[in-house]
Length: 151
Image 1 (tube, rainbow, N blue to C red):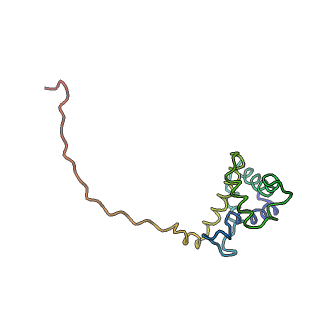
Image 2: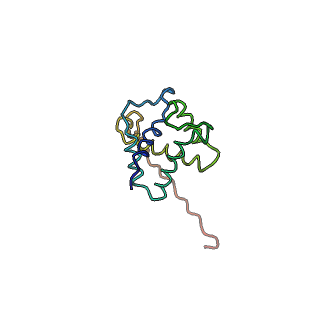
Image 3: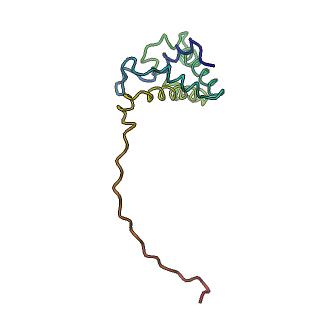
């Protein structure tokens, strides 16, 4: 069973919000990453409990302005900077369950980003480290210690 149309729309609102466009640093071109497809791939490969967790996380984040900020608003109605700040707050929440929900969605966003070769190139993710130079093998002398009581 796949996600409903509204849940897929929520994915496309929530997952890009982990990157704050005003913070600079790692920027994405518009449309470069298909967050919805990446998250759905993760969702489809998950167990039943994982799917329930992903759906619950998505619902909680969409309603988080009400629960966390105390404002009658949805996540989609917030500005991009406010969304990023709210997600950071959820991911560092003192309650493990809420923090876990935020981190699950952050993981889905990361997996979606690393599906794109241009993103992996910018992070040097696929570059292999240079092999360390081969060291000369040193042989140590072996000293035999006589056993106690052996004559």
